[in-house]
Length: 343
Ligand SMILES: [Fe+2]
Image 1 (cartoon, rainbow, N blue to C red):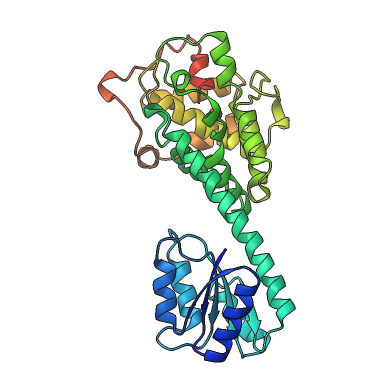
Image 2: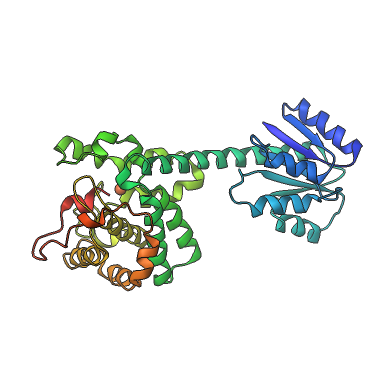
């Protein structure tokens, strides 16, 4: 693993370089903050950086602040190195976005242990990046579902905000919405894009995606809390959903919120087998489903109270052939099971 050392003190820089090379790290050493910042912006930048606090040009804390201000930047684990002792200095360093703080003169054993923690966190973050890339790849598998997870996330968060859910619930919902269909990576594109009716075998393959998703996420501790959202987003209050046939209160609140956002986007978007419904028609199907006991009526009422212009804005990117959009089917006819299941 590559590590960046930035320290203007020649003695500390050389000592660290020798020690880390001895421990098997690939080391890049520089003597000021500007050089550190240039390296951290490059492709293949080091995953761990040990930055001295006081350095010429840009100090270590400012390098760290710049890193954190750029969310598209690959995550870098930052340890601030300083001769300043004291709690308030540690807090200042951590407030700049640093992950850890080590005072000089440092102890070999302590630094080695802190780097082990850094390595573990970097590898978790890398796994998480891979998982989110898979989730994006799923959306790209079909032109009909392009951007689906992102829109579902936006609808779900709008509903969560309306319901006054906590920040912790909102954060979990955000991650679960992005990952909810990740198991579709295992579903052949030919089935996802099939314009005609599916055979029972094909339908079964589609319905395996929640459990396929759970299998993918289970080994990853940092996103494991999204499993209920992935596993149960096709469950229904009347027990007719899959894969577990849960009913009523067995389905957690956040799953029910996600499910409404998911169904709305499925109705409002084009599918290989039908054009997307208009906003009004999609909301009417949701109300009808709620009245029939399939989805949560209170949540549907809250969702329908989101101003239409906000829903349109949140749904930007829907692939819709507006001229071919179908009107709401006769209100006496039940919503197509495909509309509610193939999402
Ligand atoms: Fe799904």
